[in-house]
Image (tube, rainbow, N blue to C red):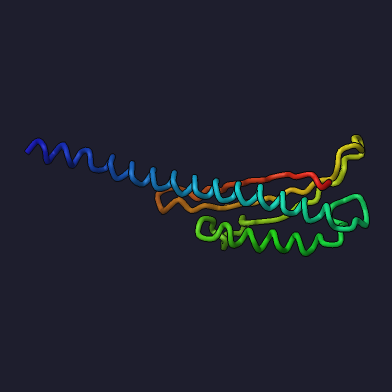
Length: 139
């Protein structure tokens, strides 16, 4: 009889442990996917824009900017599918142009891939957001 009572006392802790481990796994997967995507997207965008004719100093004035930005956004939708809540208003995948700072003209312009990924952790835990940015120089 005491074994049954002990089991009933331990059971809620075991259930809570499983819920927390599942949430941690989901959050870890979201962090890994978004950070891997952001790094790859920024490197690809910087490389593509570096080989594109420049109209001005900013990366967004390169001739292929719109094409590269659209590619990053579409790839981001595919890379984060199943992990991020893409219907949430906080979801965003974008490419950001960063011009050469006027106080340091020797620094090349750069691009940043930014991913804002809302992650639903179940009904017991609140939705959290993973925010990742990766910056690459356009040389």
